[in-house]
Image (cartoon, rainbow, N blue to C red; front, side, top):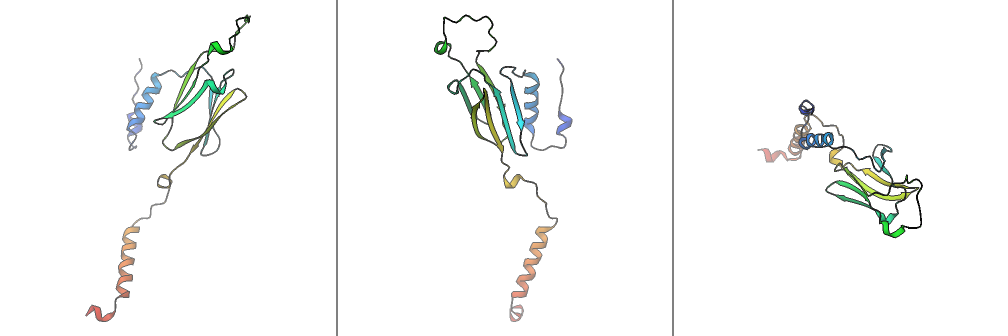
Length: 163
């Protein structure tokens, strides 16, 4: 087994302790190959997951979020639509159940899910709070504001109060 350490990446990072664990988990787990899916980016903050769910109905699919993990599951009830009079010469459409999981960033919100032309589409939006957006930090702004406040207070005081 090839062991890889990511410690050089974290020398200039603060607060990413769990990120190393996520990388290690991803390296050891094989990505599911069924059903095929796409993860798409549509703009700066819009994302979409499209899962090929041909043959599944809305009732056979579940989309859940728990602890920032999006889980998409599909299960077929073979007894419902099973016609015993059908003999398959070739069976290429899979009927097996599946489970896909996606870890979401804390700023990702799920906008909705829809079944369209055999694809389950889940729309996601990244909402960055104001406190996490990029901003310019003024240098010595606190000192300057305090000095200006003191100057304003001194100007407002009457002259006989200083005596």
